View (cartoon, rainbow, N blue to C red):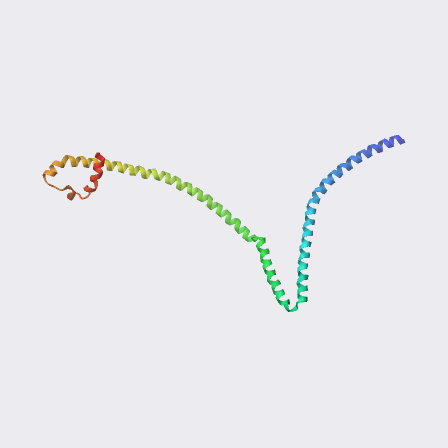
Length: 193
């Protein structure tokens, strides 16, 4: 192999290497972009945690300084600090929300509630259907009785008319003989009119 052939082969190899290196760099950059985002958030969280610890340490040092300057208030400051710590713990527990067992119980109760609500909807639909079936049934029966009653009152009225002359000649008081008759006379008059 002469020098010209070696240079040509070297150029081809270098060109191939450059393409592979460019591909690797692109892949690496995409992975770095994916990795750097979570690491930035964890770094931020770490710094915030450290800052919180520094603030807490500053408070502790201020209390120690206050106790050193005013030893007569040492017990009062410690008692207040203890009570404040208790309140803080309760606040932290409240912020945590429900415990695992409470969450499981909540899920179970929510499922039961959902099932009961679905049953309620189903029962409401059944009740509505029964009321729909029952309503015309009662109305039809009532209308039938009212029609029957009207016919019976008309027959009673025609009998009263037919026998009115004979009853009047006998001087009989039909209202005394049939106590319900006075209550029906208005209806009979309305039906005739």
